[in-house]
Amino acid sequence: MKGIISPTLKLPNFRKLYFAGATSELGSFVTETVLMLFVFKLTNQDKSYLGILRATFLVFLTLGGILGGPIGNAFNRKKVLIFCEFARIPLLICLLFFHNVGIVIACDAVIAFFTGIFRPSRQALLNEIVPQDKIKKANGFFASTNAVLHLVGPLLGASLFGFFQGINEVLILDLATYGLGLFLLSRISYAPSKDSFSGGESFLAEISSGFGYLKKRRDLFAINLNAISAGFAIGILIPLLVPFTLEVLERTERDYGILMTFFGLGGLFGSWATEKASELFPNGKIPYITVILETIVFFLFINNRSFIIATVILFFWGLLVFLRITSQMNFISDSVETKYLTRVHAMLEMSFIVPNISGGLLIALLGNDFKTVQLLQGASILFLLFIILRIPFPHMRALWSVRPEGVTREVQID
Image 1 (cartoon, rainbow, N blue to C red):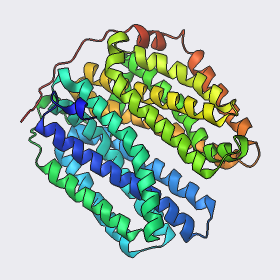
Image 2: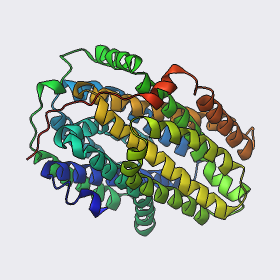
Image 3: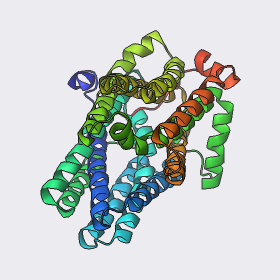
């Protein structure tokens, strides 16, 4: 990983933003894992509360993402990030003193809301502090680090909860990450250019403008539709992966962890490989190819009964997912004007999270009426059809053939 950032990305502003974002994300992953375990224990192992906690978290994360685009365009993005870090601190302090399940769910939801606002502004700010010729390396570094945090965060959270048998020590660790994040963000040298703002539109006008921009950009419209279908499929897969491992593959909870580890390792390699792959398949071709391959991989995974083959398939799936995500970030960085950046990133995140919630809620409603394999097969067929049947459509053809004009940004380097 060091090779990605050194020597070509020895940019002080980038380093500060990267480490601020990484420590904040690590704290969030750890805390979310611990809160799931804590609520499970607090409610005498009532699984319904876990569903409520997760669904509430994703709903408020989505609401924050929806507002994050307009907010990032209306205000100084550095100040938005600092505000979001400050806003989450009193909520963590509240969790230190009140261990009521309702308060835990409410605080977690509001933390998710500010996290949703934080992410689009962070990604847009990245494009303003990293030179355009280095943005692909920066996006790859962020994506590969995110893959590592997906592995480390839950494992660290579960280990700390098991060791301390409580949440206070972990919350203090999370507070420390926010403190470090505030320090690093405050030291970024950044003064927004006039291109960073959209002209003082209202929130509703901002959101409407974002949809209008997607309507004009068929390639971005295709990426968002693909994210919707992937989000729905994965929203069904994640809640069923544990019973699939135990009942269908006839393995243990430990083997479930191994499967997730291989998915994360694949994601790490996918993030690293994106820049080289983009040289062979430029512009929108990688998002186009990978989402088609993901539908096939999903189908193969749920119709396989070998644990060894399942680990290989999940490794390849993780590689494809992070190839797609990182290449989408690069595509947006190369072709979207600065004033639309936060809106485009926010809408893409919303396109994944909302159907992800819908998939989870569908499992909550139908999970006891159908077998695990039946639900997963239905999801895989819908995913496959929604992608494959759209291949002849103009927006998918645009994603494959588009050669968008590059954008010029006013980049601030200290």
